[in-house]
Length: 393
Image 1: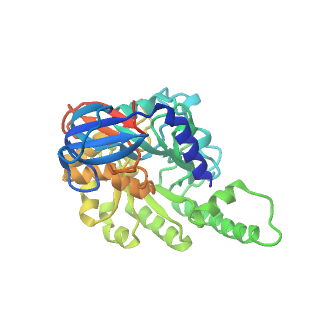
Image 2: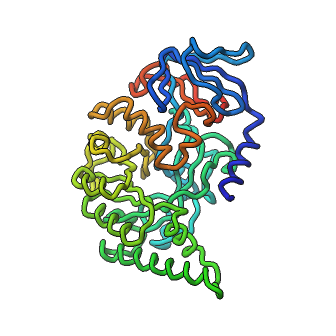
Image 3: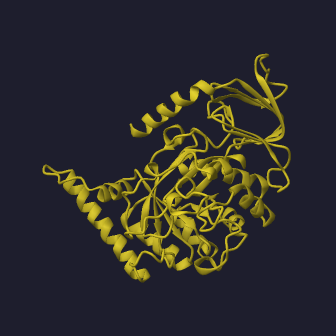
């Protein structure tokens, strides 16, 4: 019900700007089938009305016509902190990590997200129309994430899913301001203890004499009952295996985030059927990520492990990467063109559970579309138009 309310509010706030648009592309990548040469997309009331070749679709006379060399679905950043972390890099715009405690699942991204943050516009101008964002790595459980469109001036106008995942961190990736845990064993023990408490809390709350509401336990209960997914930031192979054991013990849904050494345990990841938000291709190879490879995305694809691209968290100005460029480098290091595009669109949407709304160019879906003047993965290519919910940005 909560998700439905946000969708209805979003729709009502956006409807006044809807237009009727026809897009003509020399090649249209739908992420729902074969590319369409000389394709046409019709947009009406914020949704895609029709997609097909120009000899099969008649453009009504009252539609505004846009043309481009290449047309794709709006791109999706599968993991960001943009909107909580701002480009000023000052305390007043750095809400992605609360350092007062190592475990704070009750913190909600929706309470900190700034739709007017300049970095949101920066991503939008690079074709990113949807981001999965929220609390960042650095604490055992730093808080909840959300999914938003990169349009709108308030969080209510932007939000698609108000609460999606719990951001977690394992390994030697803890922020130095958080004093505990000190070792890997202590970290896992702390998480296990809280999950055991949450199971006991669920039993008590379902009984005849429930106790007072506990926001931390409520959030962990949502993880255990499948309403939230664990997004565990981890790089080293042994720590990935720890995450898999933790998931197996408690049975929650999980995504591995980062996974610099995933190529060492491909069989284990595939058997566990756990997807990956792959580390940025151009990540700095130091610390826990010292063994990262620019070929990780191609390796995951070859192994048949679902993955999507992410910008992740950057501690320096301008505070974010652009997944379009990260995917472009992955193409240069062995990933197929259409595999990369699908990882930015329909595959990311599927992993985030929003593929009924976004991720491909199909009739009935949100009209989130990017128009390029050339190959999207060529650095010199420019974006001529970004359309979100049928509105030119």
